[in-house]
Length: 362
Ligand SMILES: *Cc1c(COP(=O)(O)O)cnc(C)c1O
Image 1 (tube, rainbow, N blue to C red):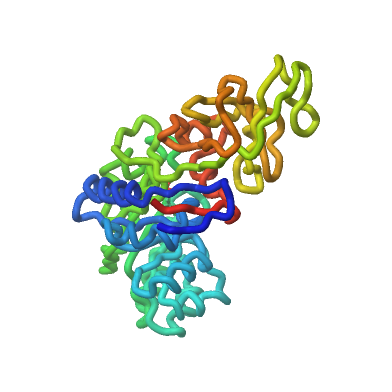
Image 2: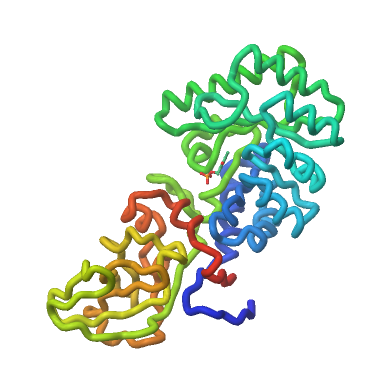
């Protein structure tokens, strides 16, 4: 795609890898399990509007996001796609969600009544099986609530779902049991809800027996697989920049704020036009590495808001304008490694990349 880049720092998104990943997952779950492709947080940083057609064309049955604002962005671009809001939509915003034809998550009779007054609305019930975040609790009272709601004539109840804590096998099994028991109680009252879903990426790979007839896949579609899990998915996101400047620093001299980093010997220092305001974690000041000419080199000094410095002493041939990869599989710097270095998870690394970083699609 032709695109004038206004910065040397950009994220390269490989759409073919995303297409490959959703096809792999469709194969894994089989024809009887629907896939809700999760494209919240701007499609985990990849650009929700750009990637969702790829997801739909290669096997996703619907799109799922966290918030109304995310749903509207997709609905405005693609009125025909089914978009589900998995999070809570405040009462006063339900009309907007309704107007755009979103699939809405509810867990109260009050919200059901608001929607029923607005007109025909597609909904999923959220059930709290132990995560303690959102949802109707798994009890008699909730069975009655669901029963009342399903009798409202304008509501099209399409799904029921919950979310696993993934704390341990036993806990997850307990949640699964609570969920299926709850569904059983509904069935005993002749309430048959089409889509039942509990699994995110990790649960889908870890517990094939919990997939029911729909899964909600996020991370894995972008090529971020769980620990010890061997699916052939590919990381689609590569963060790149170019050297803006090179300078020579004498032994003992400092670099960046507070002179936290001091040259142990005469050193070559390279500057990159990327900083924590781009979403590159400031925490990597202490242990970050980047790839230059295929070599891994350390960050030198405190990461600034818009720039950072690297120690190029081992790559003396590097010159201004040369490409640097901050993370990306091809450089041997998977996002999992970066996440480990700053003690967070892969999703946080990606979803924090800000709009200042242009996305380039290949
Ligand atoms: C974000 C989210 C998912 C997707 O999680 P991944 O681990 O990225 O697959 C699934 N379900 C809910 C409710 C979510 O909020």
